[in-house]
Length: 295
Figure 1 (cartoon, helix red, strand yellow):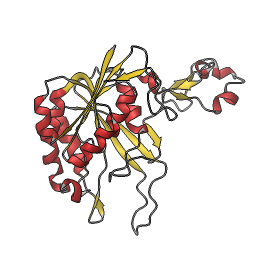
Figure 2 (cartoon, helix red, strand yellow):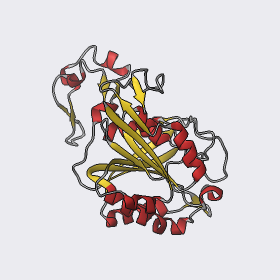
Figure 3 (tube, one colour):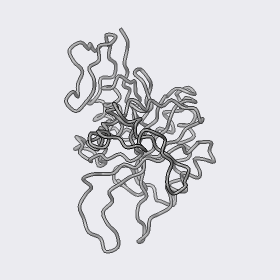
Figure 4 (cartoon, one colour):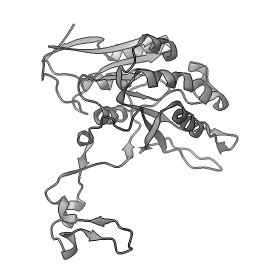
C-alpha cells in the first residue's frame, strides 16, 4: 500500500510556503493572476508593479523546489495603451538575477481561441509556458510525451533513396545533416516546444481557462509517480486534480476560500492505493478504477 496526498490550502503562497522545508517539490506548475486581470477576484496587480509583487513569491518557489526540479510558469503579456507591456520580459530577467535558469520557453497554441476583432491586432491564440530550473541537471522524462509519427512516415519511408540511408549533409553547407533510415520502424517521435491544445475546460466556476491537457503534459514530462507537485495559484484545482489522476502528490494554494472549496471538491485529500493499482489517466478514464481504496 502507498499513500497519495492532495493538499489544498487557503492563503497567500508567500506565507503558506514558509512552513515548507527546502527542496521539497519536484515540479512547480502554475498560471498566476495576470497583471490587472480578474481584479474583482484577486484584487489585481498593475503591470508596472507585477514584477515587484511576483519576486518574493518566486524566492519561496526557488527555496522549496528540489535541485533537479522544474518550475513552469504559464503567463502572457497584456496590452496597455495600444502596446504589449514588458512585465513578462522584465520578470524573466529578474528571475535570472534571482538565480533561476531560463531553460526553455514552450508555446501553448490555443486551437480554439476566443473570436473577436480589433482595429490594430488579431486574436490572441497563444500563451507562454516558461521553464525555469535551479540547476542544469534536472529530471526530464521525454519518452513520456512522445507523439505519433504521422501519416508522412508511411509514404516517405516506404521507399528510401541513396541519400536516405546515409547521413546526408545539407546542400547549403550549414553543417546539419539527416539520416532518414533512422526513422524506419518507429511509430513515435519527440514533440516540439509548441503545444497545440484547445481551451476546453470544466472550470465553469472560475474565470481562467486552464485545460487539463496542459498540466498533464508537463507533469508527465518532469515527474514520476509519487513525486510532489505544487501549484501556488491553484484556482479551482485543475493541477492537483490531474496530478492525483496521474499518481502524483500535490499541494495547491489559493488566497480565495471559494476556489479552495472548489479545488477540494475535485480531489481526495488522502488516498491509500494498492501498488500497481492505478489505471492509466486519459480522456476516457478521468477516475481511478475500483482497485483504488481511499481513506
